[in-house]
Length: 323
Image 1 (cartoon, rainbow, N blue to C red):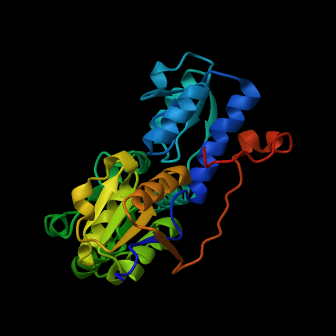
Image 2: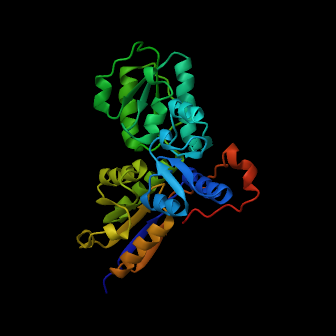
Image 3: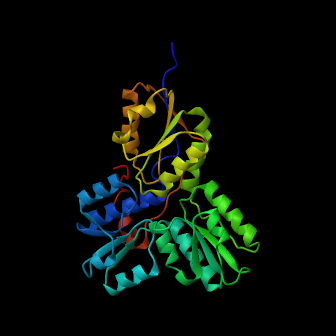
């Protein structure tokens, strides 16, 4: 008899601590204050999460100028620039900050490096919400690059006083190459005190690499605007494993499964677990009857609520973030 077709379910996968915290913040605010609660940008980059919270009364807007004066607003997990905070204060908005603490860390590093007179090289993807917020901390002292090629054309005022930061959701290998190029060009370049790429991004990439040789195909559950989800697809491709980013099970094309014996399934840090379950159920219906969970690295991280909601936490059980 032929071997059973297998789903290799990667762990860790899905929600990271920053995403859990951000979604909890919106849920607690809605339960405490009632609808509407305004949210600047998507709270996290996942369509299903945004739709679910919209049904509960969250209103997602692109700019704080669109929020009625004096209303309550939540800043997304990706962080905001000082200019956004200034406009929010001018409009007397009641701010609840859901910025991921690991993104806040990068912002604080940018402020410190700028204060100490460094030219800051920010490694990241242009137009990503996180990068826009970080750039705003020291716009005139920060240069954004996204590839090794851009390092060669980079010019800063004082080559002997340069520091670098990175977006938290980059590919580890991609960042490693760019950092090496920066070190070659600026031997005295200063690194952040600790790696900026977040633990969840790293762990999910490590898991993909660990199973790449065991699978014929990898499905990554996540939205197209999720940086860390896209990086998982790239990591798999670099390991020689065909991979597709899917919003949910309806995006799976049957032709992908032809001649495939083992399918790996993972999820970006903003993708809810119920979507993963639906993908696995679909694969079972296509003959992949064996499900094997593989956990190359363990993960147990939690972040506290922001000060604006700490006093309310005792009045609420921690709300589930699996939608």
